[in-house]
Length: 353
Ligand code: NAD
Ligand code: DAU
Image (cartoon, helix red, strand yellow):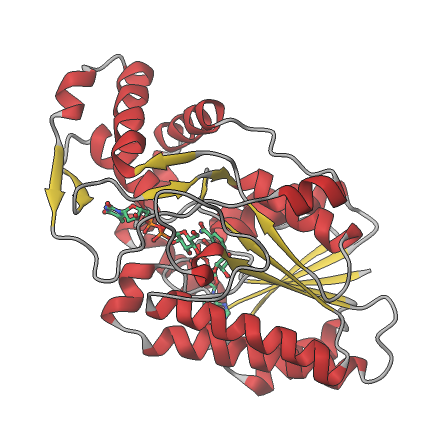
């Protein structure tokens, strides 16, 4: 089977490819990615020479480039990760979020329709989405697959819009689609603008730990490879036209997360936990900040038998260890040196955004 993955040089996409390319020699994986600031192609070093893997630098907002990639690689299946993913950036500049998340998804859906036509037996468009489309919960309750959409940020609104497109292409054109809506991921290869890698690195470097508002917002944390395994399970065994919520049963306030990370960084480096905890700094809240996310994952658990392997404790320790052990990757991402590498390696294959 030809599996076309979008956004495979980002955090979740790269973890997905690193897990599946070695495991599935019978499938050919093609990764199309624009290589934005959030991508580091070096994250793909372990698989870049695999015979069943190929990379193309493609911007999904460029409909002609998407069509050409589809004509060349003839995917049977698309797993769509590519997105602008960071809420704070969407508040500062929403336009690119609409272009990539909405228009980019539209281009992919149209490319599938163009390539497959009526011949959709065995074909699939899998859309990777977020629990943020459901908005915010109060102190009680969970997000179900049936929860009404109520997005708060430009990011979540653009993802909600993309989910609607995917369902509409299924109902109107009969495109075989599946959607997964997942809670907050953490783990190796995450760009250090997100809470967990930011806090690990700042604590390690004894820099302030900026916590929005009172730090009482709750997120439901899931280790990234548990998310990747869940997506693959839905791809292989989920029902066409259905949505599956994915979550970790790890509801924590942001303060609980930051405190746990300070203690872990101290333990793993032989440092003083109290000194790291003293770095916490409460800063101006994020506008439209959702209070609480919590996923009811009973559909994927009961129907497909998926459960997460990592607990919050095991996953966090692995993540802290990974960031401490991979200073080269971190410095590369931070200094922007990887951009020079991208120019040298891909400069003639498409324009940098
Ligand atoms: P990320 O920001 O780390 O990576 C996004 C990737 O998409 C990058 O490789 C980037 O280069 C690529 N990309 C961006 N714009 C592109 C474009 N126009 N054309 C082609 N490629 C483009 O994101 P992530 O955290 O890995 O998230 C992946 C997907 O999972 C997103 O759709 C996101 O909404 C969803 N999701 C993320 C989380 C989370 O906690 N990170 C949770 C649930 C769902
Ligand atoms: O729920 C899934 C979503 O999780 C994904 O769809 C998004 O792509 C992903 O970015 C993530 O969104 P969040 O906004 O929840 O993640 P972030 O890491 O930005 O923030 C997590 C929490 O930590 C949130 O309540 C805001 C808070 N925070 C974040 C940062 C960066 C801080 O208090 N300080 C910070 O510096």
